[in-house]
Length: 263
Image (cartoon, rainbow, N blue to C red; front, side):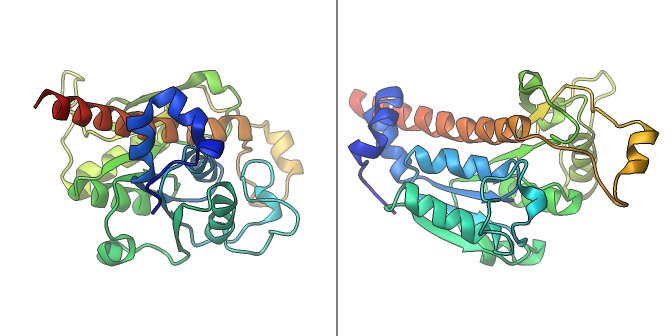
């Protein structure tokens, strides 16, 4: 893990966050699970902020169908592990960044061994049970954990918001996730008065109504085609998640520095 910032590459980060936070970023370890339309852009952002260690997790390979929204999906990369491709990209951006790549599927029983320790955990996967297990693991271990809602069928980045999982509305994926976390992992139940107790898990989500094709248009598509997705939305989810991590740990570093100065 790097301990100094390369002024040529990351001087702009220091001029935004200040030297204390920029230095803290070089010691920061962030784990991102899911290298798709959200996670791959979160990785890109964190690498370009000089983060010192990134653990990249994804058990899929890059495909042509990913091209509309995923950072790694370009000619010559198809068929290779997404996590490996993003790891190579990170090293091109910041050679000092320590990168760990995991291409195996995460299992609830073995997450401790698979993931180890980390400062922050970004969940950018869309499989409900795996998503819930990952978030519960991060929360149980006191890790700053964030999650992403669904971006499919949406095209307006201006409708993207951040709220605690307990307070998110208009996102079916987060709604299902909330129920799963309550039912299986002991997260706080809802309140009859509509003021649910916080989960302390920030979620990035969209309030934009999902755009659905007409039955006539669907009939023209190949069988099994899902909803469409556009990078302007999914990447905005990823950038927002990365910014939440950077802002959180910049604030922690500056607070610790101020306390030290007062002693």
